[in-house]
Amino acid sequence: MTGTLSDENHLEALARQLSGVRVVDLFDAEGDRASDCRCEAAGLILDYSKHLLNKEAREALLQRAESADLSGSFENLTGGAPVNVTEERPALHTLLRGTRAGELPSLFTEVEKVNASLIRLVTDVHEGKRCGFARTPFTDVVNLGIGGSDFGPRMVCRALRSSGDRMTTHFVANVDPQDLDETLAQLNPATTFFIVCSKSFTTEETLTNALRARDWLLASGAGEDDVARHMVAVTTNISAAGSFGIQEADCFPIWDWVGGRYSLWSAVGLSVALQGGWSTFAKLLAGARSMDEHTQQATGKDNLPLMLSLLELWNTRYLDSDTHAVLPYSQRLEHLPDFLQQLSMESNGKRVDLSGAPLSEPTAPVLWGSAGTIGQHSYYQLLHQGNRRFTADIILPLTNDGVDRDAHRKLAANALAQSRALLTGRDTAAAQALAQERGQPEAFGPHYEMPGNHGHSLIYFNSVTPNALGALIAAYEHKTFFLSRLLGINAFDQWGVELGKVIGRRILKILETGEGFDAVDDATAVILRAWRDANPEP
Ligand code: F6P
Picture 1 (spheres, rainbow, N blue to C red):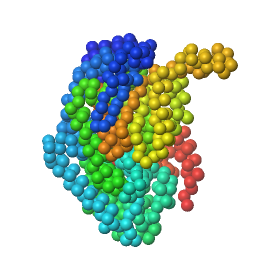
Picture 2: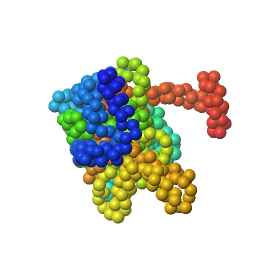
Picture 3: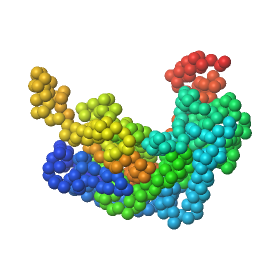
Picture 4: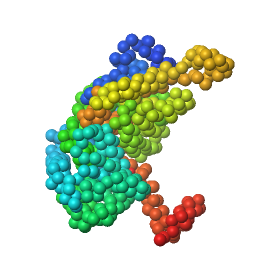
């Protein structure tokens, strides 16, 4: 924790004072609550009036942000300070969209150089100058990547898909062969273009899929030389991509100063540009840049990412909520929860502070969610009547061009109805009245009761355009960073995922050779033997 002891005590006391308070009553007490508890940035509006937060608690949180010098931290982040302390490097995703480019000219020249080569590639593919082994234009793109080399472009391509698209995009992440096989089964090898997207170019899933994709091309009539026309790499590890057989001119560099889950804005976003054209990608970058500028300039309660981070701190640290649902009421945003899950949980799912000292406070909440209204017929039951604390972001684009107006209206009605139900719940009297109406005894009343008072935000904007989406993603990136600074942790490493990879390599060896069982526990050995028995060598 980076706040002073008095900030901490004060916030704890304010949280205690608010326990038992109903947010609906705060609306009555504070006549201007609806307009006061909102901020606007780059076309997005954040309404946080339905959180259990009053003006005094908000002031104390803003004071906490002051004490943690969040604006100074943002200056350091965007200025290229080595904020990723364990990996000893900066995290300059903001530079990829041109933020503070003038202060980092040599790095930005690199970015512009790569962007120019990406534009050439996109143009060549779209104009059919670069085509497949049958000399026909490419129609489909398959991005082979995982984690940060998959979630961002997958989510954005899905969100921006339109009838005017230049190419159809597909994403394969899982090492389960079914994922690639089912994708390739729908495709024509002669017109399929692959992006091998891996910052490290060592990731088992991606390299396995890339080798299998290459075999598919060869088995479909492509010659060894033709394969090169069908594949490019996005990586920091140009030599490994070269050893794989991708020529240097087809390797689009990213840099170690860009974190994997923050890399959408680099060549990792190539599939976005191939799908919708470079101008789409440029607008995505511009939207994110607007949010960077807002975050740099807006102060206090007017700063949207700052408020998002303070709400998360307030709810997890002081109100004991440990799970956060992201509920986009937009099918276009169906992959947003997955993207945010990595962004938040891989960044802030930590247990020590920057100095390595253990943290006693909870860090990132468990983040999950799905596109509305589907979850309403599933886990919303727990939200309304379960006994766990949670918070939520309900995300609502107001328009969606070309869709059925009546159905679109119903979607909005559902979003706002859920927000209202989370706020008000159903009290004892109303529950009793319902039991009576159903001809049931009083004892049935509690089954119809819902506590409500569940803190949640509404984030709304006009429509899912590249600009709005860029701004939305950047807002969540900055929220994640601010939260990391409030907690005093490093948001840019992910050592927790490494152990599984190391053990995975050992286990794979046992499965391959049938030797080395003593390296694992007895229960694991039994399953390893069962797997080998079920999959005998041909
Ligand atoms: O899961 C760990 C991780 O390192 C993520 O941080 C990263 O986004 C993903 O693997 C993919 O890594 P790479 O782009 O190097 O293949």
